[in-house]
Image (cartoon, rainbow, N blue to C red; front, top):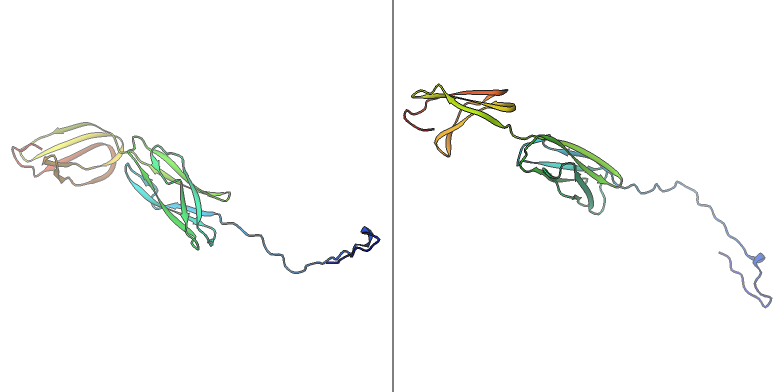
Length: 193
């Protein structure tokens, strides 16, 4: 800089000396903030009272812990934390998404947001099939046929036994149907199942 000394004549603005300088060379890039690069959940669908681990990925690590905001489109049936922290020098963090009792099937979207960026993952929430018309027929000394109807396609299997704990399970029929029939064999005569 330049200095001007006051003399007995006083300060004169026209006597100011202006120094200028120009800096040359490459400009420093502006600091880029991390963004959400992906959000993935291990399971694409969840039944009642189930959970899955979800992973949020950042575009880059930071030197301090980073808090990512989480939201969910179906908070009455799907629970996710309000946020998840990505540790310093890390690029990912996991959290759990879990369901309560599902009475109807639906989809839910989980969204992770950071620094104006967001990524979403969609989960299919699958309610159990509703059963009706359960009957036992063709009862013999060693077997019976169990039939029932479901409100949506599902596989067929019967748990049975002489006590409330059941103890036996029929062979699984994996065919997706709404009208079900399982033949039980090898039952004990004169036993209530």
